Image (tube, rainbow, N blue to C red; front, top):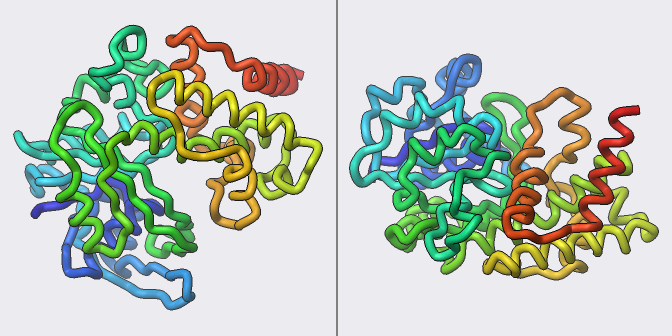
Length: 321
């Protein structure tokens, strides 16, 4: 099976490294400094035990030379997806399956044919404003992926894997099942599962970054600080309950409770970096996928989220002062 991974960041690098270490070589697509570093030094992953392992996957920026693949893993932050379309398209053959591993609400979410109505009316403006992704990639070829891994990119060639290897996989629009892909990633050591409802997995994974990210923007606190501030718990609970209600109203209920999300922040590495820190550092934060896209779905469905809206109003008022 020919596999290519686009994106040599934390998650993409971990996937390529583990497949390569298991004797399942995957071509890793990277650019510029990262490409040069990986070619020279290989890719080192420090596991939870602290022992680093270096592998040397095939690394390239020439996807025309690679040609069509059986599987393409797209592990690129949501704001950068359209920037890699030129790399992606040469890898797509008639039977290629695309496995996007992205945070937040992915661009393919409205492609659920069973949803119908306003949700399937148009691409999500928050994450696919010009419809470039929806136009370029047939939905029935996409196998959605939701990763539950804690991994840090210390440098272009060094990753620190803190824990977690769960990878949920499922077709997004009535395409092929995902059992063979679960077996592929399982051979690389992932706890890979073919799930019946990948959108429910998206919502479950979104609860913590959405709630902690929004409260972080509103209060300036980290996820750990929020979780230790009992005064914030009622507001936090209201936000999570609204997101749980939204997922259920859209037919893909998240499988979690408020207390599950609250306790996640007690463990360092379990929550992705705060959106506020990304904004302050000038990084291209995934605000569109984590915050804006859920609100767009709620608006399309005619649902109100008063607690969320109140916090966002406070954040915008503060930013204008």
